[in-house]
Each structure stands twice: as C-alpha cells, then as structure tokens.
Image (cartoon, rainbow, N blue to C red):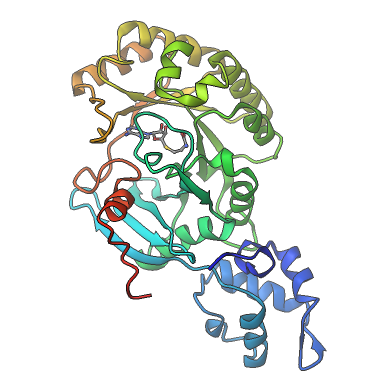
Length: 360
Ligand code: SAH
C-alpha cells in the first residue's frame, strides 16, 4: 500500500490535524475542534495501533476516522536480542512491505532508539552494508516515528534519546526527516527534548546549511572518516561533490547558528585511516570548531573487505587526539553477538528470500 499524504494522520501536526478534521462531518455535523487534541494524544502519547483504542472518542467518529485516514503502523518481522548488553535489533515491515531496521539500546543516561530514514541508501559509502542494494524510497515522517513507537510498545520501555543513524541518508530525505523531528519533539506529542536527538549525515553540504536555519537544537553528527579529500573520495562517493574544506565551513555554520557541539564520526579502518598522520590531521580539523570525535572501529561487512583496528591501535589513536585537546570517545559496540553492522539484518532477510511477510 502506498502512503497518501492527505490520509497519513500520523505525519500531521496538531494544527494540520485540526484543519483536516474541519473538512469532515459525522452525521452531517462538524467535528468539535477539541477532538484534534484528543486524537493527537492518542496517536503520539498512547501510540495507538487502531482508532478503536480511542475510548473517549465516539464510535461513529472513529469510523469516520477509519474511512478518511490511514494509521501507519509497522509490523515486527524479526527481533534479535543481545545477551551481552540487552541491545535489540528490530526488522520492521512498512505498509508497502518494504523492510527497515531499527535498534533499541540501553545506556546509563536512558534508552535510545536508532531509526532508519530511507529504504536502502544511494550514498554508496564503501564500508557500509545499507547501501549494497541501492536506494528504494524515502520513509514518511509517520514511518520514521513508528519505529520509535513500535519499539516503545514492544519493549514496554520509555525512549529518551533518538539517533537518526540507521539505514539511509537523512539529509537526502530532508523534508520528511525535519517533520519527523518536529513531531517527535512536539509538546502535543512525545515531547522528547530536541537535545536528545542526533542526526548523522555523510555530509550533504547545502542541506547542513538548511538544517542550521531550522531553529532546531539537535546534535549534528558528520561522518568524516578521512582527513584528506583524496582519501575520503576513495571510501565515500559524496566526497566527489563536496570538499572537506566546504564540509568544515558548513559544520562551523551549524555550530555558530545553534551553539551545539558538532560530532565527527570516524570509522577506524585498519591501514586505511588509522595512522599517526591521520590522527594529527583529524585533530587539526576538529580543533577550530571544538568538535567532539566519535571513533567507530569499522564493523567488518563480508562484501567489503575492510578490517577493524586492534583495540590497542584504536586506543592509541584516541590518545593522540586527546593529547591535542580533542574531546574523543570510542563508540562501544552494542549487541556484538547479533547481526553486526547496520543493514545486515535486513540484508540477511532479503538474500534468503524470506521476507517474513507470508502471514500478511
Ligand atoms: N547516512 C548517515 C547515517 C547512517 S550510518 C551517515 O552517513 O552518517 C551511521 C554511521 O555508521 C555513519 O557514520 C556511517 O559512516 C557509519 N558506518 C556505516 N557502516 C559502518 C561500518 N561497517 N562500520 C563502522 N561504521 C559504519
């Protein structure tokens, strides 16, 4: 089933919902305006899966809602639970039966969900599994939101943090991702703090400038992975379009406009970008805008052939950055015992031909 914007109630803000309801009638009578607020609460706070759950809304209005709107809810197809740290990887079916992955992680500071923003990806980063099958389509705001809601429902846990770091390039689905962030942090909905949302991009420079003008307080993470244009072009096709100098200027603009410390993500790949020279150059890029550096030992993807550095090499790389005064963390690998890198759970299902959808 394709998602029609006019019917996609979960992608609507409260004012839009009010406006949309104003065009409808129940038994020839208009729908009172306060119903929009009630409905918004059911959709985003109670996270309903059917209009029948709206117990304070009369039955005849519920059936009008059912006729006029689609309630986008994702179906859980598979779930892997890590025995090591409780990380849970979900594989969801979208209304059109495409598959996406999302991850639930427990941290000391709260529970975090990593969401996908596209079915597949067209950025082509050489080390990434999400891009191997190419790009299929953009997700709607409701499809991104329901990854958070479905996980909250399935685990019974509240979610305090959301990272847009799953499959897809969020700035390549700009409008829907911004709307998703606004809905997620809307005081009429889950009211998540904007500061608890992180958007990770491979570096689409013009969209970073756009983002800096949205008035959002989210954390921007930039996938840097190399310190020279020549090396970056070898692993990230997006580097053919934008130079590191241009990317750094955009990062500075974001930092200046929002006051939010920018994160540089840097996947450490053995013998590719883990030398002392790389560390020096990375420090020189991070220093002027006081960026935080998050080192990710590369997660080997069978089709890619990149190797992760040894623990000592990663620690020594981090040590060199710290010595230069850079705030650096090494990303703790979550759920090591379950299908590793982003996109691998979905790939396993796609390649086995088992879409898990026979029950639909
Ligand atoms: N498209 C966005 C978000 C998706 S990936 C982006 O590029 O930022 C989230 C992060 O994981 C990115 O930094 C990405 O480069 C990194 N990543 C992807 N595959 C990886 C792998 N196999 N090992 C380590 N990091 C990987």
